[in-house]
Image (cartoon, rainbow, N blue to C red; front, side, top):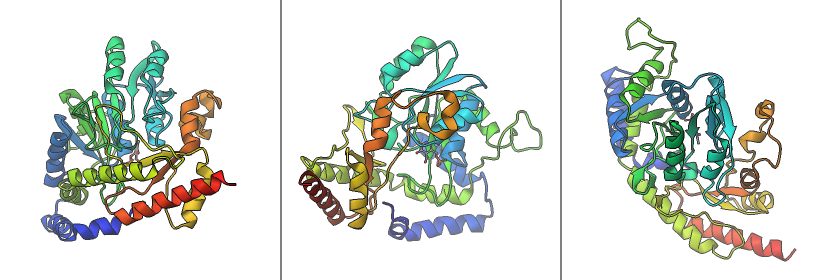
Length: 367
Ligand SMILES: Cc1ncc(COP(=O)(O)O)c(C=O)c1O
């Protein structure tokens, strides 16, 4: 799925120079590289401010806190996502309200969001899953009608567009993840908050650094979520490649789509007016649990993102959801299978994967 060393080798000289430059300079945390990265990413994502932090998880957590979400508040979100989306809401004592997804895009269904709003709702958190934007216009109408902020979980969607607008620029705050395997991945943990609000920016900068502006005077309780200089320097090198890498993912996706047409699996769609950056290329098959081991046997690494919808996770038993409550998310969890898509995957590999899937489908039909 991910050959991190192949990516490193393709830009080795620049990466080495960037890392060594930081070692020589001797400023290791929250220095000039972080500041430069914050403005470069904010500009790329169409937001006024970027606030670097330790991870995408922290970026969501700090966004929630900076927007004033309190214990007991409800935050409407999708259950078909990485755990951090729900976890951060719960960590601050707020309540994730999981609603169903649109089976075409795997993203939150705006009609379900509209039906879930209560007087306790204090925010909406869509996830731009697999690199495809959620339906932000429909969500913004609901948010405006009820005076709610939107926090975009854009962890998987740097460079993705919705009606020409970058993911990360459309909410009151947004969270990016630079986990190593992301389209823009660090060489460790890293993340960033994006916002157009000066108030959110100021609060987020305090919260990521123990509630202090850098002195030993503390205005609020915060966290240690500072971004380090080596990660920022390496990310700046990779950022220069991001557009090209995202294009390559799109070309790989188009090739898979054509090779898998009529093969018995459902290929992903790019909804109207979106620029999908294929953090994952995710097919659907009712026989996913048989297809995956067949591909493993053929030497093809695949991923299941995600095998259990958050509303059915053990940790969320206390929320009282039952199997069948969110059928589209549950069905996606049973059927989704992500294929190798990263820019380091070769065209021959894609032909091979598609051919193995077609062979599986023929064998499965003829059982
Ligand atoms: C949708 C989503 N949200 C949040 C996160 C958390 O990001 P991180 O791993 O950088 O903490 C991830 C990353 O895996 C993610 O995919």
